[in-house]
Length: 317
Image (cartoon, rainbow, N blue to C red; front, top):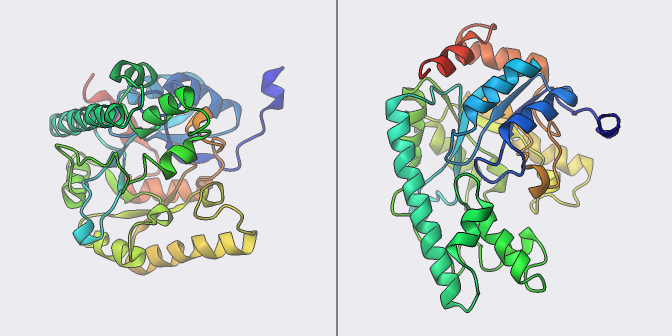
């Protein structure tokens, strides 16, 4: 009976999806099963600094008839002097078993874990009764700020009634918990890494970078540093930057990035940033039409068949 109550996805292709291997609430297998139920034909698993769920999603995709693109969302080194603050870089059609990629990701994850340990210590110094073990218990994959927020919401619901409340206070980028990571990739190095393993580097959700002084200038500069695409279509109306916008305002907001991508010759992508129960965004709420996806895939792979998706997945088998 539940299947009859789930609405069909707005778009048949969703190129930003997160699972329990980072900060999503659903396993890779369950995400792919849901995609099949809501009419999604292709999706990318883009967990934060993790590809643990890619092979599982590829296997599920074969079972359910959903094309799964091996992908990742890399968090980058903060460089405020360059106006690079809290940026994310998506990598599509990557060879996620390539030794170069595995080694780089290992260093990134180690840096991320050490940062989160230090942030837990900082919270303890601030008087919050929170342990590293509690954070680990919520992070089935790579730990992130959402897992810290979940513990704070559970233990201090009056102070942190929502994820947004936690991110607007102690977890904000310039807040008391800001600790640089011991290791993080610079944007140009991350873009080169993605290209070296056969992927397409795409700057994620440019409209969310509220701490960047000149977003258009940022996009122009990253286009000269090896980034080849821009995530143009994103559910900004479900975020703080555009919540309450009417359709005209939302269209104008997104149109700005469409025009910017066209002017710079960047490939245009889109996705929902689905996190399951952790964000009020449905799978396939934003993304690409099938025709847009076929053109993108042909541009990247040189064919409309999508064969390289399987080739990349099989290299490490």
